[in-house]
Length: 135
Image (tube, rainbow, N blue to C red; front, side, top):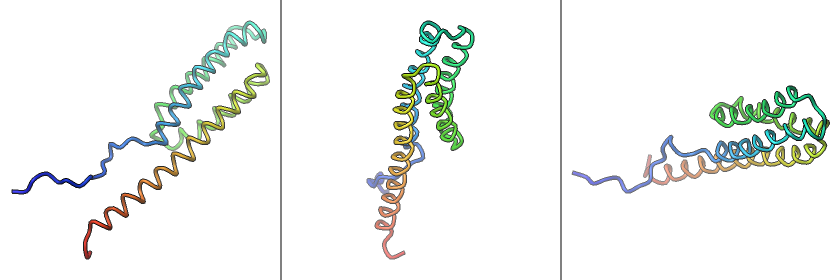
């Protein structure tokens, strides 16, 4: 009878750092985009229906994408949201800056997350190769 295996075994339940970072960016961006709604109504004098559709619509898209990040298309859609957030600067000028900040955060989360996942996979492959004697 052998005891439990003391060696770590990777599982498919490991959290994706890319997905976690990207979801965090989208969640914070949803708050920011939602808060543009009253700004568009009171300061930019945008029709309230239009402001709600744009501001709250983009916020909702961010939240839906945060939940859909298991699919690769959601990352591409995230870049579209970043462009829309920057484009909102034509109505609320501060969104040029805020949109650029979120676009930088989104890009960093995507690229850094990919790098971490590649390095993690390489480390597990090296570990497995080291553990397989003479094969």
